[in-house]
Image (tube, rainbow, N blue to C red; front, side, top):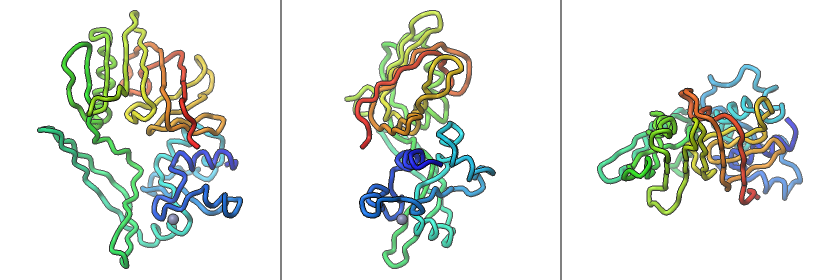
Length: 264
Ligand SMILES: [Zn+2]
């Protein structure tokens, strides 16, 4: 893995140790290097890719990001503590909005400090229990949770229904911000504009047809093949509806991204 690619992956994972909060940037400022100081910790070691060492050294790819998505970034000291303590943990997150409730069980590991009597829960799972206001066409908005939109596949179903309802609009729960707007253009063509921070949507953005991927947007973060990382921006996709059940592959065709502010 080149230094550029490794720093990019570190930035994607927060650019700091998940436990002690030591930052990669601080190490660069102090020591002019971050070599040998940070490691990817597989939250479920059984999921580690059999050829991990080679995979992680290659240039950025979907396969590499899939692997990093199984991990949290730790400094080498904290990584050693996780393995030495070897505590697995489950956390149930519950969010109530009016009479509606969303629950999500997160699996992970624990670093426990017996002196301070506190633990750090490490999970690679995306928290999806946030509520949103979802509007199909001109109908009254419904309050739905990310768990319903992603895990239960409602977002994909709504996008598939665009020929009937014409528009799908998703706002934050408080309603002040449009996070996603999809529109039917006719002949199975649709456009989707979404805020990069709307982490229910994943996209791989590339040239046309068989051209390699230029940019990945996942977990609310954008990564380019040139090593950049973006946390703010708007993704615009124009494509053709197909009948695939996987939301991230609903679209084909030309894609455009307009990152607003690069992440420092
Ligand atoms: Zn640490």
